[in-house]
Length: 410
Ligand code: SAH
Image (cartoon, rainbow, N blue to C red):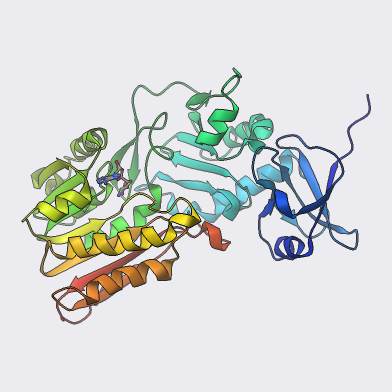
């Protein structure tokens, strides 16, 4: 049997320009010519209008993002060695983040690390591979081998699948969400460290890959501004911001989440850190409620409020509503803030730009009772890099009520 010829693709002029400038996605509608039908994960070679090699990527017949580009420029072979080199580069990029106090971080952030639709997170000696597209399934055995031989070598590798990949794999026995690809099944959750704090990650079933690793730097900042405050952590999930606030000397911390399961996780995370005096002695309260409703009806006030809701715009069409919701949420929170209180507002909606979000928060602040001073804005941390516009989802702004001078530590 002869080898099937490589899949060749030609694009319309505007898509060609985008690929040339480094964009990692080729949509089905911008493909002008295709040599034959393609299968999930096979290599697609993109030629330019002058018939020269332009780029190579992986073909995805199941997604409107039909090709995910791996390489653009001079022709080169896409093979397990190429992918292993990409993984290695990605690990090297965050080597400095992995230390005695932090062994939970993102090792591969999809497109932004040149491996589109592929995420690898480390939680102590467990690695979690999360696939957002089925193109990686055919490459998975090689990727797992590379990860096993990486330094520090993992004891366990878990596979997590996005909803669309789970649906595609419904009727086959090889892979499923939560499959152990290497090592043993974890007894319960995996415990790891972030900035010297212990946390659980439910790597088999938890949201994302078990924890929100992208908020590490914003949490570190919260630790520096929490001393003496009553802290309200809304959309708290497993209490990430609260643990930092408690270690930073907060007087009390209140976790507020709609999910009882998330709040149980927060309780266990506090239990994991009782070795720290500030944490073991802080008043920790957990409230199960809808943040919008609770903020609207409570008469309690706080010195620091964290707002970190889930994505409010999963699609472009939801963008305007999301911006309004952010503004509304900020207005509700401002009413619960003490004089000189601090508001930390984050957004993870990719369809709302950082400037749109910051403006929504600033605008709500300018309509509030007290003058507000902007202390800080932040975007993505080093282990969640962004190389193209659609990948920039995370932003955070910190505002303080009152007119005191800037905090010199910021
Ligand atoms: N800040 C967290 C991550 C937040 S994830 C961290 O640092 O880890 C979003 C959380 O919001 C989830 O735990 C979800 O249960 C919760 N949630 C979603 N809608 C909510 C609502 N209307 N009110 C309160 N919590 C909500």
